[in-house]
Structure formats: structure tokens, C-alpha cells
Amino acid sequence: MVYFVIILTLWATFVHAATRADSAVSLVFKQADSGLAHFAVLKRAGVTEELDLVIMIGSPTPLPTEPAPWIGLSEEKKIGLFLQEKMRPDRVYSLGIKSGFEECDGHIERVSATDTVISCLGEKSSRYPHQKWVYDVRAKRLLGQFSYMPYAMNRSFASADGAVFVGTNSERQVAVEYKTDREPAFRVLSGTDERRWINRVRSFADSAPPPKTFPPLPQTTYDQFAAARPRSVENGLVRAFTLVKESVGPWEQENGRIWFGKTFYDGELHTGVGGFGYFDMNERRLHMIPTPEIADWSVSAIDVGPDAVWIALISNGEWGGSGGGLLRYDRQSGAVRRFELPDIVWRITRAGGKILAATELGLAVVEGDGVKRYFVDRTTDGRLRVAEATR
Image 1: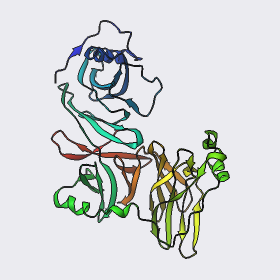
Image 2: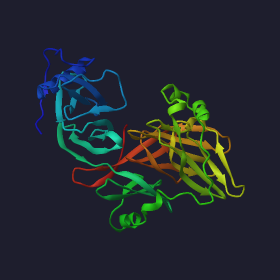
Image 3: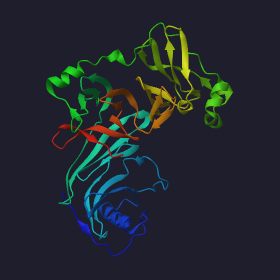
Image 4: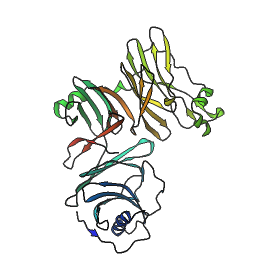
């Protein structure tokens, strides 16, 4: 891949950039494609003591000026990767420019000194291929650029000393092993080890209803909905046109109790109020846990432990689902704590004292006050590995 360095002698008026360093990168981008007129830096990361990696978007039409957690991508826009000297920002080295993305919301999943991965979420939660760049920052050279479909992890199994997750990218299945006493903790399985866990997956596991002894779920009234979710009422969900309808979502049985989370469609004048609780099979009675933090959300996964109940939040809207993070309900104190996680969670598993989640884009581990994200990544030679996400 040919690269070049540009030494600036003037500033261009077409640049939508606030700093001299950003403008320097924009000028290189403009020279590579004269059809681009508007530019914005998506990410700037120090990859060596001397160099920054700059990820920039270029567009023939104006770009949004307000910051957003995603990048609006389309075929007319281009993504460029550049290296820039920190002490001499007029020295910019082009690593590569990529166009042809589907119209989608893009997220920079990973930026490191060796590679960058950008994901793409389309309408109705459709997934487009990850775009990956691999480079040598010392040589200031692109080693490869390719795409691959992301792996959604939707099954989990406890093992003797960890856990195993099984997922698919719609083309092939993959099994990932987790062990807390190993570094790295995640490993992609192969051969007979992989087949052993993939063969355990049963298609009906996701949709299994609760036992027949479970009573009908009482429905929230409109007045209860209006009190629990006043912002939705302010946004137009008035009594005359709103249908409140909820059902039992994921559930787990524990010592004579069936713990469960509620689920509902939240779009096109349909709605509900989120919640969780348990059915006591001895008392034959439902017990709902009052938790205002869950009111706006459905539940996509639940895990019941002796100390706490963990709940994954999802919004089932008109344009698809979106993740709302994890809730931890302390069974002794009743305290609720929320952990931010942008991905939809399909399974919650405990292993080696850790809380792990199987997500639409990979895996997540609760670490201290936050959550670390991981995904199944493809290398330049076609092998699979588990990489840490930096988003």
C-alpha cells in the first residue's frame, strides 16, 4: 500500500475541523478524494510516543455538528485512517481510505497499535460486516483491509472451571471457552472441543415457556403506565390510542420459585412497564419487585444467585432492539445498581466469581465498577480470536 506525507503550506476553507492537527489530516483526505467536502475526526489515539492514529470521516454533504454515540455511515461517505506526528502535525501519513458502507449506524469497536475494527448496525437491528484495518505503525504502512460478519453469542454453558459460549455469524457457529485462571481468559475452541459444545445447542431453548403452573401475568393499567413512565405520556402515548400489553420473558427456577422478567413491544402505540419478580409455587402467588430503574425496559436475560439477581435490559422498538445495560438487584438490601453496556444481552452466566454476558456482538465481563466488552475477531490469515473492544 503506497503511503505519502504532506507538509502543509496553507489551510483549506473546506475543512470542518477545530484544530490545526485535524485540518492537516483533512487536507490529506481531500487530496486523496476531491469529491469530499466535509470532514470530522471520529477518533484520535496515541499509538506510539511519536504518532497518533486518526480515524476521520469524509462526506460530500454536511456532517452533523452535534456529538453522537454512533457514526452515520452511507455509501457516499468514506472512512480514512491516518498516522500523524505529534510534534509535527503537518506530517500526515495515509494508511487507507474505505468507501461502500451500507447506510447504518457505525461504531468504532476497537482501536489499537495494530488494528482498527468498525461495526455497522442497520435498520431493524440488521447487522452488516465489521470493517477491519491492520497496519504497521512503525513502517507507517497498511498491511490489510477486509470485512467479516460479526458473531452473535446467544448460548452459554457452565463448565467445571469456567464457561463456554456458543454463537454464530449466520455462516458458521463458534464456541468460545472462558477460564478465570488463564491469560487470556477467552479462547476460541476448535475440532472436537468445538463440536462437543455446539452439539449441545438446542433450538427450542430460547422459546421454552414457563411451567404450566405459572399464572397469567396481570396487565398494567394505563394509569399505572402513566405514573411509571411519564415521559412516554409526554411524547404522545395518550390513553385513547395506547395499548399496554406485557408478557413473561426470560425466567429461571430456584428453590420453589420461578424468577422472571417482563417483556413488551414498545413502538407504534404499543407499550408496557418493565419489571421482574417471582412466582412462589408453594404460595401460588406472584411477587413483583418494585424497581423504578426497569420501568422503561423489557428483560432479555436473567440470572438468579444467592446474593443477587442480574437482569439484562432491552428496548423492543419499531426499528429493532437496543440494549440498556445490566441491573444488579441485591437480595439482602434491595439496592439496585446499573452497569452500562451498549450491546443486547442474550445470556447471563456466573463463572469463577465473575458475571459474564453473551451479547449480540460477542461477550462481556463485569469488572469492578464497569463492564469489559469482547468480540470474536478475524485475523488477516483467516483465524478466529477473541479481541477486547475499546468502545
